[in-house]
Length: 288
Image (cartoon, rainbow, N blue to C red):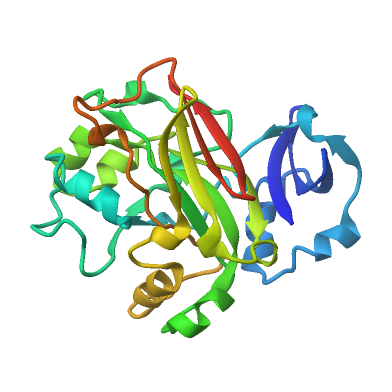
């Protein structure tokens, strides 16, 4: 199922996509957290089919991020495609060490307050250095408390998948010698258009990610090209900490980011960035 959170008639609702329509499953005060609550309480997305209410044309609602307010920051993975690891290492912005391709996953976090939905503006004006870059990524949503999970059992912890754009201020990323400030700026985490449950993705490695800027293809890669695959990431994280239901892991971005060009192609006001992943939809955001 494709689970959505959206605005309609001035209010917030949640439900699922059925063809060209949205089936409303939650409305009112708590609807903004309904998808997150479904995940956190161990509910089945199929349960929503039995409680679905009125139907609305998908074109008549304004989608937000499917989980607009996670309980915790997003766990992100740096330098997780070989070609991107090389382009980032040679860009002059890499403060992670001497090696281009990491020997172990590089983990950082991205503030929940950076999340926006499809169609929302990314406020590049908040970056005083004017070095805003895009990073199309696959997001993985965890379905239960998970500690000390082996790679063999990792997919049992996955509720579903979502498209993410890990927007980044490159100069702030370099200036602070870590990635939280440069990546945690308000509006710098577009997410959506929906959360696709794991049962709809038969082979996650076969998914293809494509990022376009003003219609020009900049990034194109398969999830199979990850240096550290999803089971490895889950095993690594849960070896020392507990993941919670509703936690989101952004798995890394492929080659083709703005700093990979000479000179760099930073995002500016008026640009449009689109990130699409096979079967997961198209996440498009204007730059302001």
